[in-house]
Image (cartoon, rainbow over all chains, first blue to last red; front, side):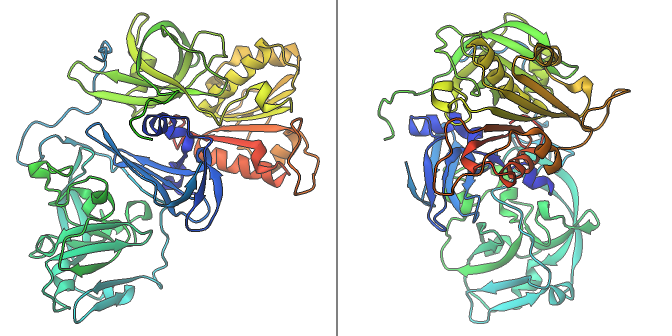
Length: 86
Length: 200
Length: 262
């Protein structure tokens, strides 16, 4: 496994930010990938986290499910890769 | 107001203002890897670089690409996350060579990459010796985690514009935000004017 | 949804460092005094923030090392190129102030009324042992008799975190068993595992899982696995567990990235 794959986290790692953004605990929320239909808990989604932002991807097809970018106290949230989140 | 944690300080001190280090940056001797997705592993036999969106689109296979005139340059690179790395050596094909193969009038490009990453640039920032498609770093083949087999190299802009795993450019009449630009990073990204975020 | 007052919103609170315990040469446990701490569940984490006098702010996440009802504690491993961990493991003193927010996490939690009474298979890679230790402490404090096996992968005996506590659990033989695998260096006479976790080792260690018809949900008394540590450790162990018949929904994972702490 190459070094980059070792760095991939999961939704647990952004738990605090998710509460900030959604106002609720989200790691047990179930999301459906808009591309392949895979359903899974946010805690188990693949999270690519860097100082640029956090990109949450489907573990099965790598489709971008959510993007969070925090710039100057404002977090931009993009959920368009999800067919649903509940 | 946040309490001060006694004795805590940032790890990297900002560089003294000098000709080589843009404002707000610190010099690193590492080569940090930041990523938005899994590392693509495109076989060279499948790899092409294309310039689309003109009346004379062009495309090169890896063999054709390797046969183009190439050069080795030593440049400083500056990441929006505040690290700068000085004197990095790259080998690649100048965008002047690649853009000379197409006839175009469009002023902008969107660079596109394996894995879906995109970033936007003015064509004028790719020409006249300012940019390359680089396939070798420090004398060795560019590692996949750093964008290999080939990445864009545009050292005068913040390094998110030097798109990893680049596969081509789409010429455009208008400037459309790429991946990070869509979420608030600056459309242009000049480190010397500290254009990190939209509105800077 | 944005902008409305919602139950569970996190706020940063000022915490004071209470006690400082060196676990190994690189690992330290800090107990924190957080006025108004609302309690936590076993397996949760908290975020901490440090502010320097020039206003520079750094945030990190650490698993809570203590059980519900105990004072909040975190266990931090010093990363050689770290920014926060060297401060927390070397510089911080009793009485120093840091900011915390939490507790965080609704997935990687063990809570008997919700989690059921299935035997626990805990797998720790390095500092991944921290939330699992909280789970074990909770199990003991509430007087649960749920059997627990902790498979703890660590480079050498010197790097075992909570060593005396874990060895004591083994001696007590009260239903908690700790199995070490020392992957790089073993003491003379070591007869335990001495390699990275693999499917053979897992097969020897884990609670067997009765095969169930595919359509039915596993019973609440089926084994429950919690895997925590570096990403490559978690990926390998989780897939081994599934290959050994653990339903994926009975395997909970928490990845710490390449270096062992998020």
